[in-house]
Image (cartoon, rainbow, N blue to C red; front, side, top):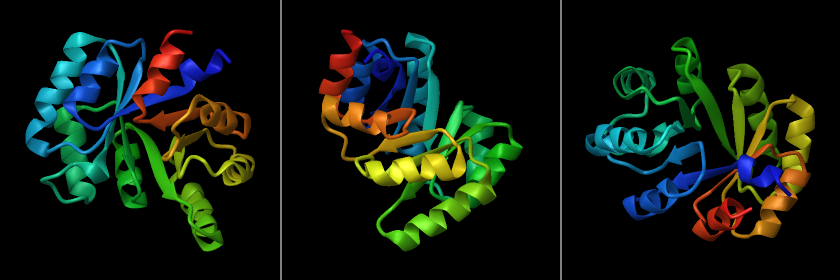
Length: 187
């Protein structure tokens, strides 16, 4: 399926993974788990190597609080193309600053599903990331219920799982599983 390479969004956890991903043909990446003191260098390094859309996972930046003022500071200083967060208030602040947003939801039971749909409708995030990404039935339900582009993430470790989540309504996939990147980069 040709759509998968275009739909895959590599999620980078460390410099080893970054080096590998920078050699592949992806135009969007997610930065996970970095220290605020390294953020400027990392973003500069990525942009010096290639033109990519950089999503920054705000909740996983170490060394800052995770409130509206922090997200405003990060956006103004480091200029990520988009942010990811589990916090609706941070989505709303980023939207005011005209930055693309992903609301990350952990769907663990029916109550979390109900609360998640409410948050989706109230935040107006550009995308919704549902974790774990292997919950195909929920992906399909949220996709139909909200008509928002869905990003599946978490626990996706095979090409078959990528195909399955895409066939159930996800438009994109985030994964840090390097063999999947390599597989689709060759096709």
